[in-house]
Image (cartoon, rainbow, N blue to C red; front, side, top):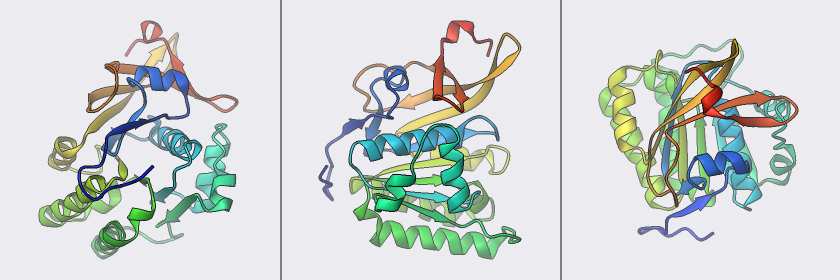
Length: 242
């Protein structure tokens, strides 16, 4: 898929999961800025891995930035839920970058360095990829000032205008509400992930706040589970007590 620097054509990319595509109104609008907000355990990384698989299956190149896992652990975690990305990684179609350093703690200096690296990559290297996934950006944003956050967000919007989808995950308890609101306002797709209940068993729920550019109307709430044998399984919402 060609990427133009001016007004790239909006298309839709499959997530690689037919049921999820249908509930999202056809897939993920591309290019777009996608925000997924949710606490730990709500399925953000599983969905990021699923979206990554969809882009890769479509022949696109993806760069995945993880701030919470090593490269090896991320690939193993995806494989353990039947989303095997290893071959794509070995062939160079998928690039995984990790800022997770054993024993290192996040602080302002580390967050600023990570933000500057992201901006530099966005301005120079991201054009080689169709999707940039940052899972998660919470620790980076937690230590940045308002002006630095605005600069980073502006750079990410510039990436989208040049034809690359950017997917960002955030933990609401780590970043301030004003930061979430700023990212949500700038996003083309905004999903809030929560937990629901079916027969005493917890499931994950995608609350679709907005999705611009989907071919058909997306459902406002999508319940799913993560099954090690089958990956992401959509659950009929009528069964879920949210």
